[in-house]
Amino acid sequence: MPIGPKRLPFFEHVAELRQRLVIIAITLLVGSTILYFEPFYEPIWAFITAPIIHLIPGGKFVVLGPFEAFTFRFKVSLFASIVLFSPIIIWQVLAFFLPALKPTERKWVVPTFFAAILLFFAGAAFVYLVIMEPAFTFMLSQGGDLVQNLADANKYLTGIGLMMIGFGMAFEIPIVVFYAIGFGLIPYRKLRQNWRYVYAGLAVIAAIATPDWSPVTMGALGGSLILLYEGSIALARIAFAKRIREQEMTAAELAEAEG
Image 1 (tube, rainbow, N blue to C red):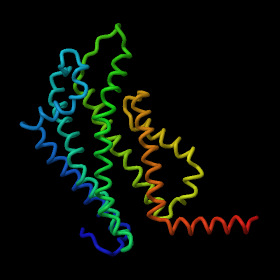
Image 2 (tube, rainbow, N blue to C red):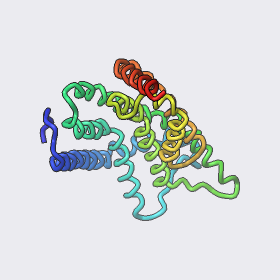
Image 3 (tube, helix red, strand yellow):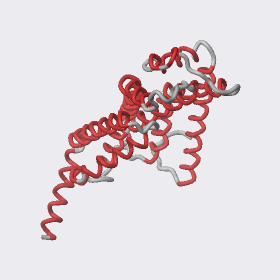
Image 4 (cartoon, helix red, strand yellow):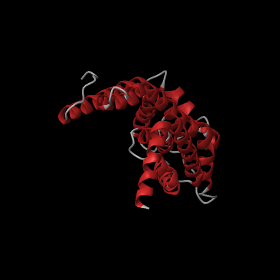
């Protein structure tokens, strides 16, 4: 369905959503199929595990059953395709909402697209460069000398993949906050006044987005989300200064009338 200036009725929105989901599914299917084979599979896994390979006994991961090698290889290609082809996924999400936007609002779509890509890759890179080594060091230390660590490739991959995707999605929060203020869904003043509740909510999001639940990972993500939130608030204050002033004047008039 083409993207146009008209607003779509409900059932056309459903058809539009289905089309976008089909495109995403085909993208991931084709991408994961290509990445399943050489010369992609082994370099991808070597790259993914580079920050923690020195923590693994003998530098070798294991699979624990005859069918797990296939499962593992497929998951490598799937997680890699989600990250590498995330720009296509992000565009399909934005394209779904585009018909519902006013002409004056559509000017933000392309900047939002590039900002969303940047934030997603920033979240994934943050996991890879900052979080992985200390998080896995902490988790591996919890067994002490009583247990032997069997480096199950599938479980390691699931943990790494979910962290990268979870952090990437969590790093999109500034866009949500920016548009919530810009579209008047949440007044700027209310977000400023209720910062304690916002921080608590970000802490909950950090806990949900970290599959290992280690304090290292949750603390790093929570702190990052707070910084991103404050940055988005400051940016929205600049971008929507006129609207925010109008909201503050209206709030002041209401307070004076009630007083």
